[in-house]
Length: 163
Image (tube, rainbow, N blue to C red; front, top):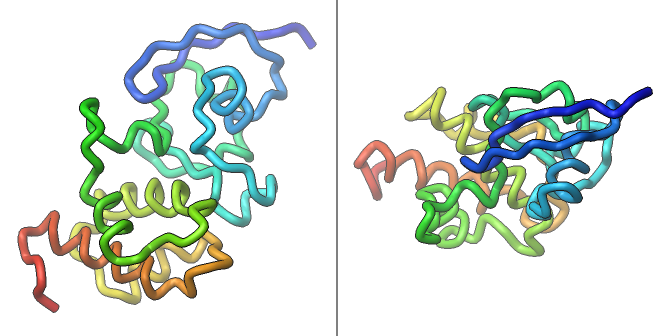
């Protein structure tokens, strides 16, 4: 198959590329864009380590071909912080509530939590656990992750410290 030209916005920057039609979005982001925060774990869409936002929706970058995102706006973990480097509320919560250990799964969790809290700004802990059930962590035991998402939701809603 002939290479295909695409145009995508990645973390606010326009990228024009000529790529193989079967190049995954994850590989495009990591290799062509140099954004290695999108991690490849299972490469079957099961672990969630490669989760990115495509037009605001959380997707598994290992399951999409980059050509499928032509014209889209993509946000990776590198695009979660503000342009001056200030961490997002969710990133701060993961740091402050021990929602990470080795850090391999963390980008996928942060991106998934970002999309989730946009849709469900005041979730129950059960809703948090269900929303993040598609992301796998082998280190934390999930409690710190759930606490981080709860704290981020409380912070976003202006009810820090309430239960």
